[in-house]
Length: 87
Image 1 (cartoon, helix red, strand yellow):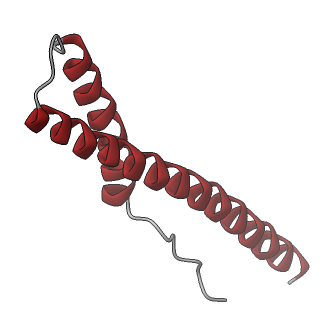
Image 2 (spheres, one colour):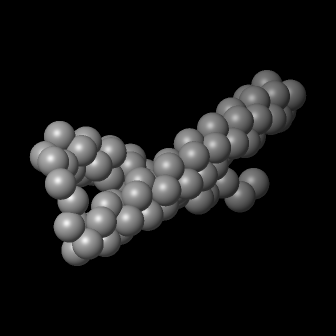
């Protein structure tokens, strides 16, 4: 029986969570320091908002994929244990 391979490496999972939390942290720091925004600062805010959006999408995808992978691996282990007991 072929062993199921996870879709996301631990490094990619870490990167997804890091991207999301870094974006949120940078956005909060920017809001704290925002007294009067100049046009170039508004551009930075747009870039950070895009970073937060990408981080949120990546985090959602990684979380869903990891949960599905855990279910598939658990099912494979159940089938393997049943076949070992039958033999």
